[in-house]
Length: 338
Image (cartoon, rainbow, N blue to C red):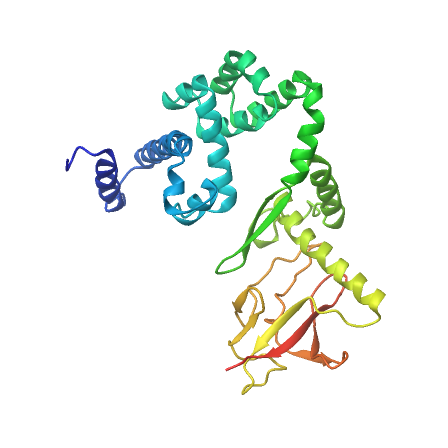
């Protein structure tokens, strides 16, 4: 069996790739290797979808006591629940429509495109079956972005009766996952079309494009759309908390800072402080770029001196924030329990 099992061969190739010395390679050779590795990465992803289709159809995940297959993948498959849901959805689509599975197997379409096809086919399975040759031809010729546009064009007139089901399904799928990491958190989720449009419009008003005049290189470059929307989302949340504070007539903490009592907790000058719900944070924030409209938000609990504020027996502090329009970031100070 050794040397013939596909997984053993993959593992052997991966081990050789990991120790490959590419320091003396020419740029062209390095690009060729990059292209080849990413192509194989995609093909492995396709096989994950095809394998999941067989595994899910047999209900093999139930042997370990997991009820839904997504729970198994999130645990044993070591992936996020969002990623697990996408794979299972694509796998069920491949299992139902053999022609899609064939094009995935021979590489005519990628796993990313199958995900788009599966999404469009929800509640429109009979129309997908009718138009599968056309849709698979489009998927084999278009890139993922153009395919998404084409699928929306097909999806709208395919079945008006399914529109209400789609709207309800989209609303039921609304979610937001926040995964804390070493330096911050990653956000992933889903919004229905109306909710996504409302949020995007609000964020773009809160953080409009930076002026384009000035330096074109270095740290003063204008922020990207995703950077502006990320900072706008935090400002939107802070505005809500500030509004609640005004309605309540008292300070409302944005975050809770856990500090070490034996040190000067009010100044937070030691490294041993953390944000409740996130974890340890560094004492000093990283440098942030400043522009004509650029607002620098220091992570609360890492900005140095803070001043305690009273509030119905709670220890609440107010941190200084460097912004074009100064605002408050309020934090509740909590002693660390032994």
